Length: 140
Figure 1 (tube, helix red, strand yellow):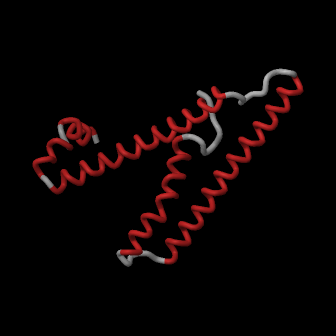
Figure 2 (cartoon, one colour):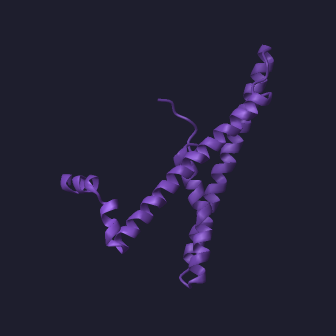
Figure 3 (cartoon, one colour):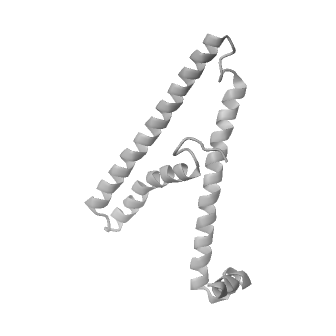
């Protein structure tokens, strides 16, 4: 197992995405007259934490690139991170990270919708809570 930078995994991306979603959700609550000033202050706090995380990660990446570039220059090897291959690799890793996060979030929402439908339509209940769900309930 290898450990990466804290906050850069799928959990960190999920946190950042949720914080970005909070103002949208609160605007919906504001339209329905269920928003409070306390909730907006919480959103501002979490947004400031999110900005601090992103700035810290950017600063760490910049500092590491400076150190590696100067070390490579001092030793006399090619500078790391130059060329198209590096840029493609960086872009692909970002797209795959966000793609896996989007897949997880979509799966959660699909399951949530399926449970909601099963409560509203008894005929669908058997599809959602089939033999697997019955076995899981019996095991508890």
